[in-house]
Image 1 (spheres, rainbow, N blue to C red):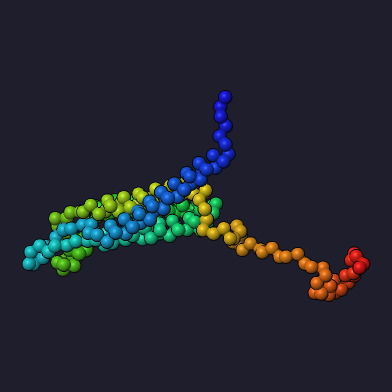
Image 2 (cartoon, rainbow, N blue to C red):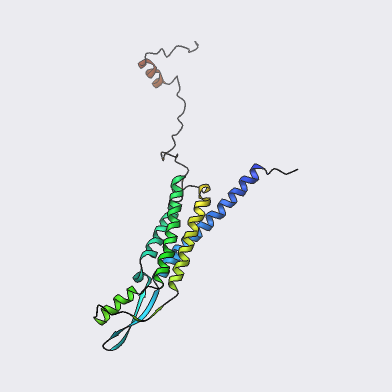
Amino acid sequence: MTAVPHPRTEAAARARSGRRSLAVALLAGAGGAAVTLLASRQRWAEGTAAVAGGDFPLSAKGGDVTGLPAALAVVGLAALVAVFAVRRTGRYLVSGLLALAGAGIVAASLLGASDSGALDEKAAEASGNTSATVESLSHTAWPYVAVAGGALILLAGVIALRWGSGWPAMSGRYERSGAPRPRRSAPADPDHPGELWKALDRGEDPTRGTPSG
């Protein structure tokens, strides 16, 4: 005979799974954004430009090559926070934005790993020749570090899409409409003078139904 799992056991298992997925998504999203921002500030490419005095060394940081990874990392952070501020359809949309931000970082960083445009512009400025290009071009590993950061943000978005519907929202003090829950008022005292005057204003007899002493 097959044992039927207890509802409380299933609920506890779902709660543990939700907490694990939440922790992984937060660590992956925040860590990925930090890694991407750090990598964007590092040197991505190096080379030289031919000038009158010889070869002039050039270098370009990630932000010089492409500004997309850093910008999308900020978008990813904002989406990671916004996941907990919305529910249902809104949460799916924000989770999708988080995943797209990570995918965009991966694509932009991979393209930037072999890009020479930023150094070509610097070579033209250094030599005074608008047609000059960079020589002895080489790239560092930092673009691929940014790729790893984007992959972490993408992972956070996928986790949010899969398990985010069971995560808690920022506040439970508000209803789904966003309005605060009304406070329960104490029952009116029919013998209170104010209530007697209100009954008279409505044309009622406040003494009706009152037992005689």
